[in-house]
Length: 451
Image (cartoon, rainbow, N blue to C red):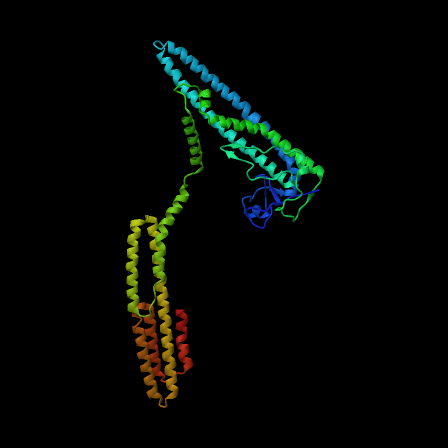
């Protein structure tokens, strides 16, 4: 029985790679599946993957081999051979027409155009199949990487970080895994985590070794073939051999330029422009950058009790609002100006209501203090007529002082105070000693109406 070897997670210290990501074909930790680079990927426990994934990799290798043959090798040979034969036929015909240049000059020019078109199509085909080849190379390398990871998991071979060297698209494939690796495999690596270790039977180990070896054998030849073609493309003679030595045909620089244009077109197609709705939202956000300044100014205003100071503040606020209106008219659109004016007028009305209510509350408190002081003074004095007269005079003086400070607060409050004073004076002249209960009943309905 061989214990499964778990490696430490290189991303999250303290975690072990006890899962196998089927999308990336690599071991990973549970934390990497939750918040790491493997989030949202399919996964299996590493023990189950080591037992069942080799067969899956073998099937995928068979499928990939057949797919490379059917979708790349045969179509590429047919396509390129047809283009090459067409190009060769046109070149031969052009050489024949050269001998009849004096009589067939027009026909020669037409064939030159056809040759250029065919060469362009051939270069485009080479770029296309080169990209397809790169995709198949990556898939084959991915499967081999998964096979190496599973072989390391079951202890068939020790992974070496420098076992794969990359030079362009060239990859050095590790030698195939054989069943003899099972006997020479170590029982456990010193840096492997012993927790949650499970054992596999020798029969299972042999099956795994056989399947992984078959995976590498299946992919060895196609990968070598694809890498050889990649190396041949780096040779300038390959282009001249395929396209010919004529000056009108494309050179290697032209093909590289065309590949760069194709990549650039893909990048430009992926980066789409900003939609119209998003642009409108951005413009509104830019125009509203000036609004916090207005809000801070309006929120920092105080509402003093004195009417003159309040009028001065209101005038200053109106001037500031006018200045803001001028700035908005020069910067914003007509719709934004209309909305800003409505908001400012609503804020001004709200401040005015708040100021009126505050003045009414202050007037009521002053009247209450006058009435209470008058009542206490009447209880302390012995002579009723003199004390009542003095109390009425004091009440009128105090109330008049309070009412004079609120002339600018609004006509309704001033009229209410005047009416209260007139009724209070008439009441005192008829009945010089009213009770406290009557005084409070006299003013309570008016207070309720104001509230």
